[in-house]
Amino acid sequence: MSERSFVSDIDQLEAELIARIDGCANTRELEELRVAALGRRGRLTELAKAIGRLPPHQRPAAGAAINALKERIEERLRRRRQELEERELAERLAREWIDVTLPPRERPQGRIHPVSQVTEEVIAIFAEMGFTVAEGPDVEDDWHNFTALNIPPDHPARQMQDTFYLEAEQDGLPLLLRTHTSPVQIRTMQAGRPPFRIVAPGRVYRRDYDMTHTPMFHQVEGLLIDRRTHMGHLKGCLVDFVRAFFERDDIPVRFRPSFFPFTEPSAEMDVGCRRGEGELVVGAGNDWLEILGCGMVHPRVLEGVGLSPDIWQGFAFGMGIDRLAMLKYGIPDLRTFFEGDLRWSGHYGFSPLDFPTSWSGLSR
Image 1 (cartoon, helix red, strand yellow):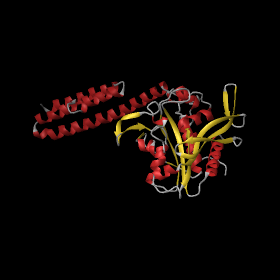
Image 2: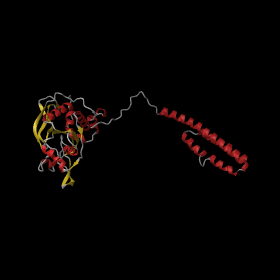
Image 3: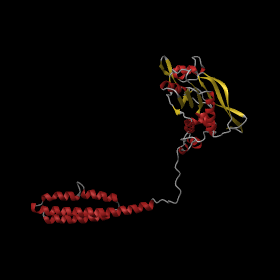
Image 4: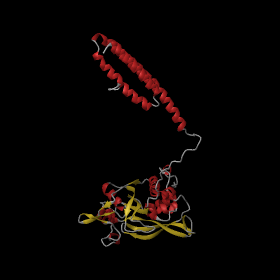
């Protein structure tokens, strides 16, 4: 190859590449052309390899010419890419413009389930009374769920029609799904030293299913153990709670004698209400509604966890979270709590901003 023919090839290639660069319709075509011209197997690369066939004294000049051509092509590619990008951006803006004066599209917002909302409300109220939250396992053994709570072997709660028993066993007795959160009280007293002041919210399980019962539901139980607590403290605590929870100071309250194996004396707490025209309203009225059970902790329960009933005493209470939610927010059927219907959640659910971190409705 002669120097004259090499220079001619350079001039011809430059003219061809510039024409093709100017003719590219978009950045994709321009990129394909760049690779074809400057890539590892591109036209300029192949031409540079031909320098080796020139006489030695002609190679420096040929190499310089190739480098100069490469710089000119790269600069032409850069200018053409800028032109095409500006044109494509202008076309895209014209095609995808947005009228910012229009109202934005409404985005769906998640809702807090009533059970979660009421759980937090209950915890917030008792937290202002000095109670802390305690938790325990859903799968329990017979001792923590029954025996430690002074529930005798022949008690109906132990029967198969009431309790979900598992195949696994411990100490020769089947494990079970806890039927109340009372075992949390036992575990708390075993693990610590008095005084105790806790609430124990959580899931519980019983064999039942209708408008006001489901196989899985939610409870919150409370326990207070110290040296001086008496029944008057229990009554005052629960009266303050229901009035703060329902946000009404005119709620009449009464306590009826009852029986629970783990408390003595035991009581049912009723609140005043009125019924009519298919609705139930908690507050002043001519009717009563049972809302929770309570009592002074039975001496046998204290002895079972190693506490002397001659020194320590206290009270316990328990209530259904789902039932509280139904009463406060007018939800007629408990089964709908667990059906996962987004329309139901949208109607009865709460904004995350409504989650309570404290409770101002508690009387001082």
